[in-house]
Image (cartoon, rainbow, N blue to C red; front, side, top):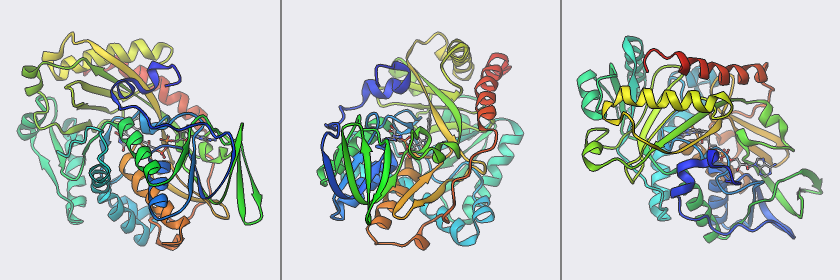
Length: 427
Ligand SMILES: Cc1cc2nc3c(=O)[nH]c(=O)nc-3n(C[C@H](O)[C@H](O)[C@H](O)COP(=O)(O)OP(=O)(O)OC[C@H]3O[C@@H](n4cnc5c(N)ncnc54)[C@H](O)[C@@H]3O)c2cc1C
């Protein structure tokens, strides 16, 4: 996007065209103005417009420009942190509510896809969290215990079962989560946008919000060539936040993550890898992920930014690591490569903010944004329309807090990932 093949890679090559989203060149009045056209903003727009509100979405770049158009496409239930951690950190009420909402969130995504006939390659065969070594297996065993205590359909596979599902002996086991699956994320973003427009929302790309001022009981959002006046403002800019809500960006530490996509594999090779098409990621801190797209390309990713020395180091690592996992892929060509920034919070949990009267935001999804962004967007629409109150949200109101030493951590993650991949003994 914006002429950069490293921003959205394969997803830009294979997604259906975006619906028209003309730049805002006039002043508009609406009930709800939404800043950011990713999963959160577009889901909020769709649900608010469906409920009868007038809605304008403003994005500084394009539909799906942020994390929503760049990610791996794993539609996960829950967060990175262990399920029991949520009530521990958020308190029983919010912890239980968030777990319940996020546990059902993949189903909400797939139902929206079905209802609006969104062509985004949905695969509902689950995900496999793959255990590296005894430590990884012990972590997944505990994760299984905690989810099953909450009635979730997860199942720990031993080494042999995991090998049969994945097509490699590299893992000590895997946790199968039947709630989850995969999608083509940019196609899902564009499909959500088309559904929101069909429900009556206006979407304006190339329309960065530069300022926000009060006008009686309304807010005026200024862009370079037009303004939106609204009673409610939903700020859905997350890790790609550009002013005026810089505090949202400052609350997050950016973790870079890249993907390489192989050329489509031949049928025989395809049958030997992930025969049931689950999406996968593994347990180490510098994790790896892999999944198929519909045309049979294997998308393989890990932590790191494809810029400077990172491009050649991560590319060389990806070739070695892929061939080690699946020797039949030695020498396979990559058709696309891209990366993006994941917004991490200090406790790896998302935040709900009331930035001012009637200006609200969810922020910091920690690499879990497809299903959470979709249901959080729905919550924000319900809040703006008065269908629910703040007390009904799955998170408490919290003021944005600048992440200490975030620039130092960001540099550490980027350089650390290069070092890890340079010396990775596994590859
Ligand atoms: C490489 C990568 C891999 C990931 N893998 C997964 C995965 O497999 N599964 C999963 O669930 N999640 C994953 N995530 C996380 C997920 O993609 C994000 O959490 C999610 O996309 C966030 O959606 P959002 O709508 O909140 O924000 P975004 O999609 O980031 O959208 C924010 C938008 O706001 C716009 N914007 C910013 N400032 C302004 C302004 N001032 N005016 C107007 N517009 C503005 C931006 O242009 C952008 O389009 C991954 C993320 C990355 C980067």
